[in-house]
Image (tube, rainbow, N blue to C red; front, side, top):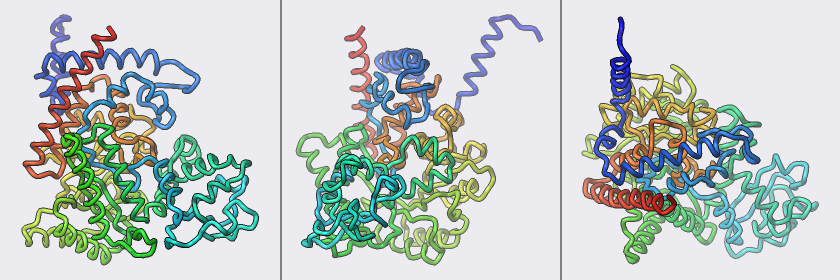
Length: 534
């Protein structure tokens, strides 16, 4: 069949249009305001310039740079770009996928551990230059009013293994041979985070990096087990959301442990209900401060997602589901939904829990209660194994959103179902890259999911461990890894996150109106700044 160049190009344009017809940003791109159109062009121009100037040439910091490369290696360079500064200022909408214990900068946790004299640290043996790389700090909250700085420190020759020493004393006594107090800080931060050498070298498989990942929670848990710390921690979380342009959050909290923390005396236990009360009080106090400052639209609130780890028995799950339902009745405005978390590749699949989950769903229906599942599923490289098949069970069990859904790209019918039923996938690009599901963001299935019309909300997952605090870094990596997605795509994803948040109609309308106003100011600022520097 012969054709001339004009007809060929017309058919080519038609084919591309058909291929991208399911994208969620298509409708918005067809109805841009002049300011939005100008901002989109400016951002694309900056992206192209930085792709050539920054990401195409070897430099002193990066041996082989490219857009969307390994985050932990590229973070400093990312922060230096003009494009990141623009993304940082963007209104992000809702944070729908993050785990509470890992949502705040690790250095804040360290400062809190040092602040309270009854937060102690112990180790299995004396810390030396020979074992410092393999021994982890074990923090623990001790009864208040007792001296914990009289016994030998954890680096002293006379240290008694597993004995508790005040964190402040351990830091002050840290020998100069190990870096002095700053060396102590480095040691603790290394235990609370994943560094480039671990992610891309010593633990460069999905199983190995998860082993390291889990130890980060074991280190932080001892610090967070104290109510005064958790109150300050929550305040930092809410403030950091505002700083990054996040106006609402639904945060997953692990309730597998039945005693979450202890009161200020260091002794009195706080159960699940007590934790919800603390969360509610801190949130209410922060929202009141914003209201008094005339800044209510900066942060509209937060909710908790009740999670348990997928290692428990079916019988134990029944107790947790009853506990969750009881808490929902007591805190209807705070508890958003239920999830089962943990490394899917090594823990129990959803199918192992079908009986209690189906019974719970039936019970909620009988009570006239709409209590959503928000299941993690498909966070795996598996193809057709039980982990990959968690996606089937999550959808059949009626999940409102899917955490990660990394392997859904292998399932065209499931993507179609998500599109038709408006099931949002909480995609966490940087987390997936660091936890070795993909080597870089250009290799991530996100663009394919977007082209299939799958509803998506970007999440940061565990930013305190990965260093991708807020949502700016994930938005940035998505933006620089694509030629088709632009600023408008990010805006559509941000607004869409509020549409998939578990809000009542009145709150959702308010959230969307506030976001629309911030977005309008944001694109105006981009255009104004470009005119100033032109």
